[in-house]
Amino acid sequence: MKPYFSITRKVALGYSVILTFSLLALGYALISLHDHNRRTEQLVGGQFQAFTMLREIRQNLLAQENLEKQLVILQDPQLLVLLERRSADLESLLAGIKTSTLPNYLTSLPASVDEYTSQGQLLNQVFAGGSWDQAATIATNTTAPLRKQLLEDLANLGAQHQTALDKGLKELSLQSNKAYRLTLIITLIGILLSAPVALKVISSIDGSIKALKKATHEIAAGSFETQIDIRSNDEFGQLAQDFANMAKDLRELEKMNLDANPLTRLPGNLTIDRELEQRIDQKRPFAHLYIDLDNFKAYGDHYGYKLGSDAINLVGDLLKDVVKQHGGEDNLVGHIGGDDYVVLTDPDRAEKIAKAIISAFDSQVPSLYKQKDLKAGFIKGIDRYGTKRSFPLLTMSIAITLSENMEHPSLLTISHNCATMKEHLKRLKNSNYLIDRRKQSQ
Image (tube, helix red, strand yellow):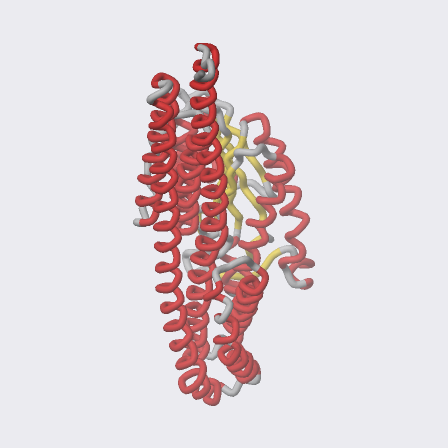
């Protein structure tokens, strides 16, 4: 006699089959997703960090080459300070390679530069001793060939890095394809038993995986402008969003590095203009602080390029500290160039920040002068007309424009407004700020 197999048991068996395949598909998808996330984090944390370090080391070596040539030709001891600073930066980068989690092929780099760094230290000592002919000989016959070889090694490492990056992205893509195929097979079996549920799962996973595959290939090709079509609000969709955010961050980082002021490393004109246009387009109220040092040209002519650069850096650091203490999260500190800076902040914070900047700057001014000049209260210099005269100590002028006082704010009107206020402030004594509270309808 055959065993009795009731409808209830058949339904229960059918439901068990559906549940089993659903759990299998879900479990495999989550495991693959977890592994995918882990490998993506390793790729971003290791390969892209390696890319940045290789680029910074190469830029450092080129900067050292340029400074050595200038030292040999100009024989200016002040350039030695910059060369020694570049040498110290290179040692810091190499130390970072030893302590960071980077691909194995980069671990040989510190050993390949030991001879170069030792010869560079010897060359710096010869420069410091004023033996210019000997220094020129060492630079030509020793450090230059070593640096050339090192740059070639860096190029080879860059090629290895590109190959490793391509391989990693390819493996990531293959993993996505594999996860897609196996998940689809398991899900298709479930479709035969429960089409509506299975179709929904397949549609969600299929859309997310295709978006991830597209993003993987585009980023591997060096395109950070990729747009990811996210069709589901699940882990795959979140991973796709993470890819989009990563591409956006890389794009912004690339723009910032290209635009940053080489002296203060503050955002430059492109970043400032882009931020201004974004706030104007979004109709977000803001205060534009244009900061200028008074009598800076005379200071630079009197004390020289090095101390002038130190003063520019001091003001940049001072602005960052003040805005960090008194500003908001989305405030921007930018360096237009020379002794001109910009701070973008909220209108209700502008005056407080301006006062804090002037107070901090005035307290630092005495440290920028020799005691005799500080005691005299002025320095001697040549004005723009070639006339020798006395110049007061450095002061600061801050012109503040409020967007909410303008009917149609624009980069041109803000720039014109700052120039007008700056001309007025330059005629005043001591450090001052001025807020334009007039309602303008241009």
